[in-house]
Amino acid sequence: MTAAAHDLMTVASLTVDYRQQGQWHSVIRDLSLAVRRGEILGLAGESGCGKSTLASVLLGERRGERRLRAGSVQFDGIDLSTLRARELRRLRGVRLALVPQNGGASLTPTLRIGSLFAETLRAHRPHMNKAELAAEARRQLSQVGLPDPTGALARFPHQFSGGQQQRIALALALCRMPDLLILDEPTTGQDAMTRRGIIDLLIRLRLSSRMSMLYVSHDLATLSEICDRIAIMHAGEIVEIGQMEDVLLRPRHPYTRALVASIPRLEAPPDPALLPASRRTPERITA
Amino acid sequence: MTDLSVLLESRPRPAGRRFALQRLPVSAKVAGLVLLAYAAVAMLAPAIAPYPPNEIFVGSPFEPPSAAFLLGTDSLGRDVLSRTIYGSRTILLMGGAAAGLSASIGGLLGMFIGYRGGVLDEVAMRMLEIIMSIPSIIFALLIVGSLGASAPLVAVTVGLLSVPNVARVVRAATQSVASEDFITAARARGETSLSIVLRELLPNVTGTLIVEFSIRTGYSILFIGGLGFLGFGAQPPTADWGLMVNEGRGTIDASIWPVAAPAAGMAMLVTAVNLFTDGVNRLFGPAEQGGVR
Picture 1 (cartoon, rainbow over the protein chains, first blue to last red):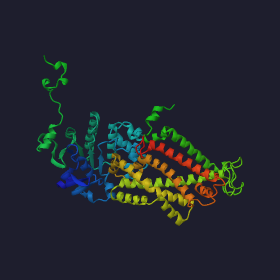
Picture 2 (cartoon, one colour):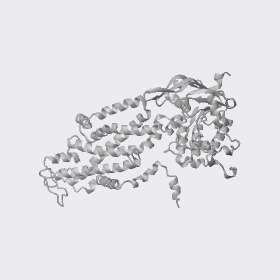
Picture 3 (cartoon, each protein chain N blue to C red):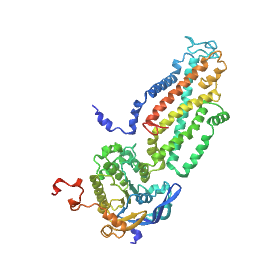
Picture 4 (tube, each protein chain N blue to C red):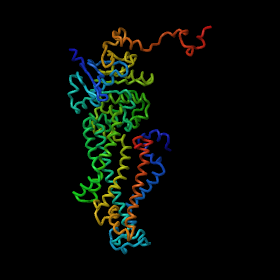
């Protein structure tokens, strides 16, 4: 099998500009990347480096004050930039899905969870009846570990906690078992237990299906747990890409080294003498 | 027994506004009661009007107010009170229809161009601005003058003339909602533009639409009254307030009542609509809970 046959999503020499006050500014520059079939690719980088822009470009999003100046985005051999709106819509939610950064904000506040599922499922399978829609929604909610899926369908998004909202957003994205799941910082802002739950869920999902995932995050520690490969993005460019262990243990680019060095570690307690007085415990104060 | 806390917990946030009417300012509550009274009078007109509105010489011309004719009679001896009561039907129906038309068409148009954005938005906005730059009264007189005056045509004309105003406001409200994450998420799920506009956007701009409907109701009532006065509204012998003022103004020396009654009716109606709109704006307006316009 050739490398191209292995690749599900291919980004080649992509340059994306944003317009600000009448001027075009490049936020992604000559970026090339491939997500292979069945792999989880991590995309790491600081805030504002263009990660979320890249994620939305991969979904074929064309709105807003921006343009694709150069390059191409191909999904399973299909050039997304050449697709008509209707063709793109057929792809989204079925073969391509997004889990947004803020699960709560991504759920329409005026719709019950059941309606959100019904809309999502009906967008691509208009002939499903009510019973089938409800059964499928319950199945998806159980899969992401939401308690009382039947009761959840009748509730509104604001009646769930942040972690539960994120799980619902994930369940909506998984509705059609897409070929590629794009996760845009799905655990950012979540507490440690929720983050753990979402990561475990993704790991289980990965084991049970051959779904490809692009996991966008600035949190290297999280990425190191679930990703096969990782791409480091800096100022709109991919500065390093490779197997997880290689990049984390033997970073070559100075930015990657700085990023790896900034991962918080549980180490031996610091020398009390070096701590500021306010952080010294009484026991540690020496005479 | 129903547990109240369960009911409150399951209460959807936007639907919570159903109870918002209770939080209206006192002036708006009073105005609401006045409007309800107007609606009741209009609906019960045949039962409460002492005489048929168009029957001439039920009394002598220009009779002053008396027990038989509480607001006197006009130049043709018709009962002014009965005509004023029936006139409320015409104005409420035409004003409501015009406001409903402008809110629905303008609302849909505003949501659509606000959501789609880009060139379509630019072109549509410039066209709406061009339409808005032409004085409405000239437009209305041109249309009604060339197609013939009739109550339905006047209502439709006045309604359509307000479409640009509603569309502009709703477009602005839509733009702020369209940039929300849940709209992006709906697109990412592959939903159609129509589904997004009707299911995701509409429930989130309802407050703006309600305020616009109220504003347009007051405006339409005045506009339709004005057209009626100019002879371009409902035609004689219809009991129309604008028309009644026009018919009575030539003989105002003989009796002020045929002019004063419909004029006062309209003044009170528009004042009530405006006060009610102010209150509604505070609850549902663009800046919510403070409503700035």
